Image (cartoon, rainbow, N blue to C red; front, side, top):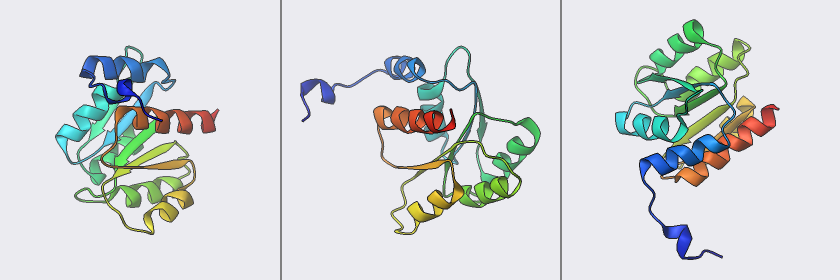
Length: 146
């Protein structure tokens, strides 16, 4: 049951602070072709001990994984220019990169969940989502890694 406090609007600072409380990763890569989405994710996941790298497309994500890894968490959109997020993740898994992955998308394709499940150590989060859902998804992935 939801109460009045469930509908409270939060500032970006409050959301970022709340996300940090339970985040136990130190290196995150965020890949999304929408700069506003990347900014929101960065604000929600940032912290004093957390390094965040950003990619604007699949090719940039491949480059970051190859040259700047390892990362503790990958957050990626599905549809991006140059290479889709799932293509990058399939390649990463083939290269033995087992980093936890949070896949975010606005797509409603029925086969998408099965594709994410086959990646292993990955979770699907559908847009639009709130900061509590983002935090819960990250916590689930981190807990599964421990």
